[in-house]
Image (tube, rainbow, N blue to C red; front, side, top):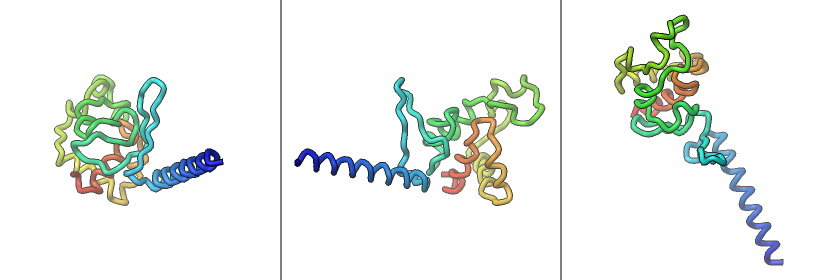
Length: 148
């Protein structure tokens, strides 16, 4: 009888924990991030950006191409997935980093990121970014925190 009650209590506790985690994640609570560990040991993180985003800290959320890298690393290590400007010849952008053509600094990236806070530019957030579809969302979260 005690074993049955213990099993019920554990089951109820587990159900409440799952429900609370789902609610917090739906509310985008950055303190609750569910990561899936695949059979091969790879860790899958959330596809949506998760804040807070800090300059020198790895990005938690977003597409695989940027997750786990700092903002600076994305600019200096990643190559565009598609041309940054429509019609740009491949020899100019393919297998290049942003820093090959641009002199991005933390301050200049912050200026760009603050554009995503302007309601007039909200449509820009839905367009994919050449460095990974959710990178703009990460930059917006970073700008919301004052580009720290």
